[in-house]
Image 1 (tube, rainbow, N blue to C red):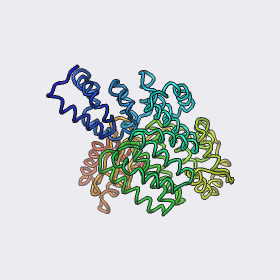
Image 2: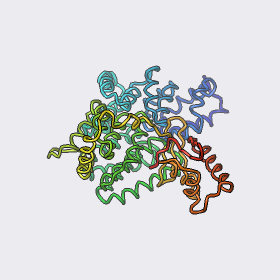
Image 3: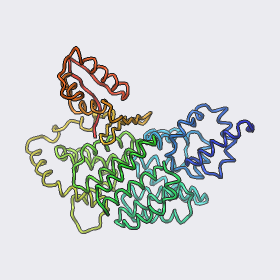
Image 4: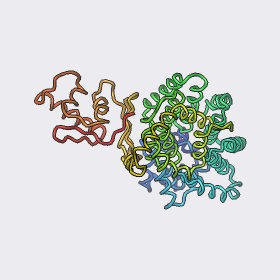
Length: 484
């Protein structure tokens, strides 16, 4: 199908935008002009996906390669899969799409890995290795996924070896950034911080070119963790907070970015020896919302190390499921509980040091727990099933809804009463008088003067957050908010 000169400039601008934001590469621009013209005229569903507001969100797509981009241009469902995984951060929806549509091998493998289906991903990798050897760019991506699999299994030596091999084969810039991030992860976990920092410095051109790539965010997280160990946790926290504030101002947040920040904060808390239960709960529910099972398992392990009241129940009833699925978690738990002279990863050492510091209190609590309660009846399943609707991060006045579709990221002004109201109601129900005093200070509550103020504030909270606030017999209750 031809394309008129009238539309050529606008289509070329769109393609240039896609190149700059990583969805396709330059050498595919000309051959895709015809497709984009056809898509504009014929396929309204795909047109909607490529509307400019959606394209703005697609700044985070970092998996697209030259070979993948050709598939994306030919198959709208590939674009939908990328959107679901990278923008909506919905691994479950991505996996569902692979079950109903014929998608690329790489998309299928990634979907399986992030859903925690390690054995199935491993089989798919082995089945396609030989037939993809004559497609160099796709083969590099396959090695990249093989390296990801090794890291998922906690085999950092193998992961690093595969990453080096893929980089030697000269991938394109987008793949090089993703592989560089994996290389830094390998050096970090193996304790070679100097090499990790050197590799980060070598990647500066790529991270500045692809500033919204998820690989860039992970590299920043790893840099923060190294600063925490080489300098101090407080310097690392300040570094992380500045970066997160930049991302908030950019208005390009995704659940994945919030997840990266939360997990990095948890690492800093562990180094300081401070408990981080609310952050561990946030980490659990973000990972659960995204459907990324390995990170759900990591969050459960964090909860086990932090929630002294429920540690034995988590250990006996929840953790075994993830230990059976992920050898990396099994090895982590073994390293935490056994102070041997064998080499352990940096993450394992950090968890072990934290666990040993809090172990005595945990053992005392668990002994009391065993003596007073029946394990089967101590805690209901509500501990993991009462899903919050949203998170509120006090340090940033940031409100985040726990949904993969139309996720709301709302930053409140420091003078706004809504954050104070949210925090006052997050842990308990309040009478009107208590709610008034929590939000307006020491003024004496007078119903006929102040009930209108209360109603107006509750209306604003409902309108701006979508949260369910109930008022029954003068008592105000907020359902479904976790404050961190």
